[in-house]
Image 1 (tube, each protein chain N blue to C red):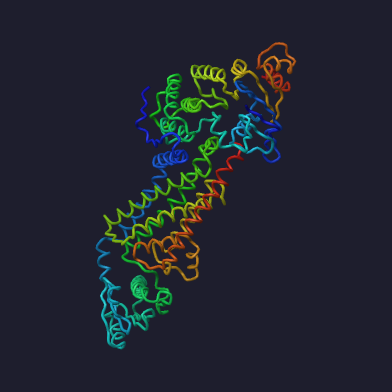
Image 2: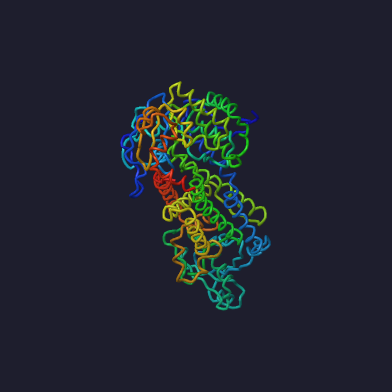
Length: 249
Length: 379
C-alpha cells in the first residue's frame, strides 16, 4: 500500500532522510517515531508529494507516485504537523473547498462530516478560521481529512492540540478505519499512543531507520525482554546521554 | 450543531459534469472570499487609488477649472488644407486667416494662444509668441494643437504624419486636467493592483503555509496561480469601476470610453502588471525584499511614466527612462481608449498582446518556479 525504496532527501550536504525503505500493508497502522529533527516530517512530505525527493522511489496503492501524482494525491488524506488553512475562510467554506478540490460526492461527504462534527464537538464552523485556537483548527483539519474516507491516511502529530476526549475519539476512529482496510501512517511523540495503536513501528534517527517491527520485534532489537516503547525508543535513540543529564540535574 | 451551510457561496455541479471546472471554480470561489476579506489587500487595491484620486482631484482640480480650461485657448489657422479643421479643436476657438502675416501679427499682440500653418494636411508649422513662456500654459496649448492636428490628419495620411519641429517637447495630448489625472490614477491602480497583489498573495500564502498545504491536494500549480490571478483581475476591475464612477460623480470627468477596448486594456494590463510582480518575486525571492523593490519601482513609474505630469516636464536626459517602463505604455493605451489621445490600432493591439503574453508567461513561470519550489523547502 505504501512502499518507499531507498528514499533519500538531501539539503546541500546534509542528508535529512538517508536510504529509507518502507513497506506498509493495507489495513495497517504504522507508527513512525523519532526524536526532533530525525526526518519524520521530511519523510511524510516526500510520501505525500509536498517535498521533492533527492533519490529513491515511492509507490502508493501499487502505483509509482512520481508517475501518478495527481491521481494518488486525490486518494490520500494528509493531516500535517501544523493545521495551516485559509485564515479568511469560515469552517463551512473550508469544508466546501475541500469537497470541491478533491471532487468528493458532496452529500455523502457532508453527511460523514456532520457525524464527525458531532463526535469531535465542532460547533464553530460559521466563524473565521483565523479566529480558531490551535486545537479547533486541528479538529477541523482532522475531520476534513477523515470525511473523505481516503484509502491511505498520513497523520503527522495528529493529537497535538487536541483535548483528551478528541484524542480518544481520533484513536478509536483510526482503529475503525484500519479494520475497514485503510492504511494509516502516523508520527507521534506520544509513545503510549504508538504502542497501543500501531501494528508496526519504525524508529528513525538522523535520517536513518534504526529499527522496525511490532513491539516484540522491537524489544528483541533493543535487547529488552520486557519494557515499554519508551524504554525501547530511548535505548535505540539515546547513547547514554540521558542518564548523565538526569544525574547532573 | 448550530452551523449553517446555507451561508456558503457554493458552486454546485452535477457529479461527473464539468469536473475540472468544478475544481477550478471552487478555487476561484475561495480566492474571491479570501481576497475580499483581506483588509490590507482590499485597502491597497480598492481604496488607495480612490484616495489618490480624491487627494489629487481636490487639491489640483475643481469642476469649474475643467470647464474653464476648455474655453481658454484661441487658435489662428492659415493654409490650404484646412477644410473642417475647426471641429478637431473643439471646444477651443478657431479663427481662420487669409494671410500668414495677419496671423503672426495677432500672435504678437497676444490675441491668439497660437497660430498653425497647414503646409500639408499632415504637416504643420506652429507659431507662438516668444513671451508666451509660462511652462504649464505652453505645454497645454501644445497638447491641444498636437491632439487636434493628429486627429485631423489621421484620417488622411496617418503613416506620414509629421508635426513641425516647433512642437517637439511640448508634450502629449490630454483632454481636461481631470481626464488626464483619472487615466493616471487608473494606471497606478492597475499597477498596484497587479504588481503588489500578486507579491502579496504568493507571500502571504507561502508564509501561512497555504502553498505547502496546497501541494498535497490533487490540484495543479497552474490552477492555483490562475485562480488567484483571476481573482486579482476581478478585484482590479472593481477598483477601476469605483475610480471611474467617483471621477464622473465628483470631478466632472467626461472621458469618452470605448468600454469594450477599455475592458480589454484593464484585463491585459492587470495580467501584465501581475507578471511584473512575479518577475520581481522571482528575482528577489523573498516577499519582503520583493515588496521593497516593487515600492521603489512604483515610485519610479509614478514620476517617469507621464502619469501625473507629461514626460516632457522631465529633463531631456532622463526621458528615455519612460520608454522602458510598462506603465508609460499602459497610460498611453488608457488615454487612447478614453478618447483623449490617438494611437495607431496596431500599436494598441501590440501593447495589449505584449501585456497579455508577458503576463501569462511570467505567471506560468511563477507556477513552475515559485509554487513548485515549495517542494524543495524543508520547513
